[in-house]
Length: 484
Image 1 (tube, rainbow, N blue to C red):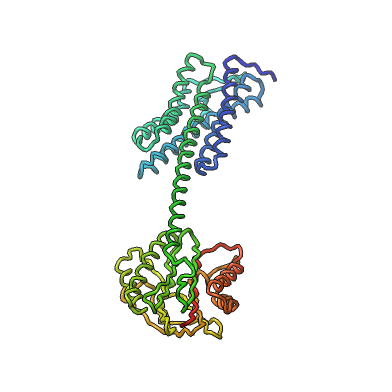
Image 2 (cartoon, rainbow, N blue to C red):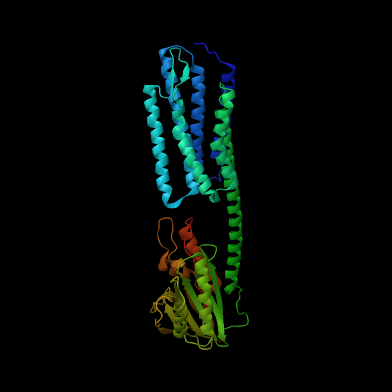
C-alpha cells in the first residue's frame, strides 16, 4: 500500500496533528482542574472527545483515499460516516451549553427536545445517505467526491446554529462577555473557514477553526470556573473568620474565668463547653443574685450552629434578667417561656435547668424545663441522679407551668449538671455513653475539686467515643458547696 499526499492534504495533516494535540492538552487541563465543577469536566471530556474523533477520522480518510481494494472501501466509508456523524454531536453539545446558560424557563424542555429531534434527523439522514449517495460517494479508486446535494449534510447543523444564535441574542444578559465571545467564535468560525476554502479548496480550514475556537471556549470556561473558585475561597475565608469571631464572642458571654468568685469561701464552681461545630447551642451560666443567693443555669437549644447560638444568646439573657429580678426558679422559667413564645417564628426551643442556691443555708430551689436530670453527691455518699419532674421545654407552649423542688446541699455536697451531649456521646458502634457510665465516672472522681470532676468525666467520654466524631455540644458544670 502506497500513500500519496498532495500539498493541500499535507497541510491538512499538520492541522489535524496540531488539533489533536491542542484538544488533548485542553482535555487534560480540564480533567486536572481540581476546582472545576464535575458536570463541566464531564461535558468537556465528551466535547473534546467528539472533536478528536472528528479530526482523526478526517485524517484517516485522507490517508486511505485513493487506495484500491474492498477492505479500503469498507474502511473509508466507515470513517467518513463517523466523521459526518460526530459533526452533529459537536454542534449539539454547544447547543446544550447555550441552552443551559440561557435557561429560558418553561421553554427549556421544549427547546431541548427540538435540539434532540434535530440530532435524530441528522443521524437518520446520514444513514440514508449511505445507501443513496445523498451527501458524498466514492469512485472505483476509493476517491471521495461530494454529491450535488452535499449542502444538505449541513442543514441540521445550520438550523441548530440559528437556534443557538437566537438564544445568544434573546438571553444575552445571562452570558458573561468572555463566554458570549467564545460561543459566538465557535459558531461563526466555521463560516469564515468555509470562505477561505473557496480560495484554497484542498485545505480544511474548518478543522483548524473548530479546534482553535473549541480550545478558546474551554479556556474561557476554565477561567470563569477559576475566578468563581477563588471568590468562593475568599468567601469561605471570610466566613471562617466570622465564625472564629462568633466562637470567641460566644465563649466570652459565658463565665470563663476561674476561680469565679475567689473571695467567696462558701462554694467552688467550674464549668466547660465544647461545641460540636464552631458555635454551639448549649450554654451554662452562674451569677450572684445578691450577697447570699447564687443562680445556676444549664441549657440546651434545639439545633446546632449559628441559629442555635443566636437563640442561645437570647435565652441566656432572658433567664439571667428574670433571675436577677428575684423571681423564683419556676417564675424565671415561666417568664422566659412567655417571652420566647411571643416572638419565635422559627419554632426553636431550649431545655433549661435553673437553680437558686441559698449560700447561707445550702438550700437549693430548682425547676426543670425538659432538661437532663442533675446529679448530686452528699458529703459522705456517691453521686446519684435526681429524677426531678420535667416541665415542657421553653418555647413550646406559652402557658406552660413549671414545678419547683428543693434539695439540701450540706457542706461538702456537690452538684453536677450537664447537657445531653455527655450522656448521648456515641462511639463508632453507635453505642451511647449513657448516664450510668457518667455516674461511674463521677464517683471515680470522689472528693476531687469541681474542675477535676469535669476532667474525669471528659476523659471517660473521650475514652469511650475514641475516634468517633463529636455530634453534639458537650457542656458540664460542677458546684461544690462548702458552707459558712
